[in-house]
Length: 151
Image 1: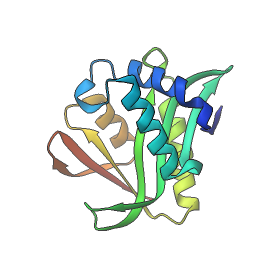
Image 2: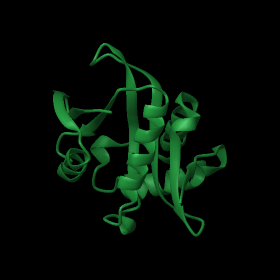
Image 3: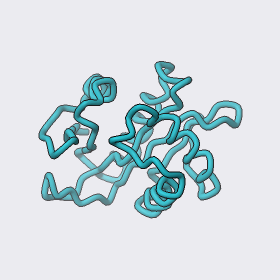
Image 4: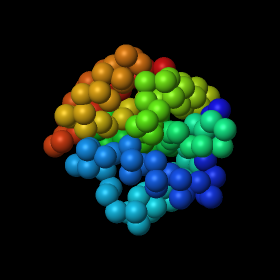
């Protein structure tokens, strides 16, 4: 089941985030206090666009979308996916796809015609996932690849 994130989900967000980014630390925060601050920032950006996938009360993945993002890359306001991750033991079960579909519907409901995101340039699995979901690579900046999708 997908539901909106609440402030009390902070602790489980930190736990799942750190597990999800194991081996991908160059693209993530590595200290609990930094991840907790990141959670607060994501929640402050667009609380209605921050979702959690849970099964029988267990948090399995998160997505943070932002309907009010001004992208300096595109030089206009677009929908933005700031974060998407799934517990490594629960990957390849459709959780990420479910979260992304909910997020895209949310952003479309807010009038967004385009959605962007940044993904680690060497994170082949994530890039392939986003490509399958209709995103295209549109640029690079440092260790990051910019991807975008029209809604």
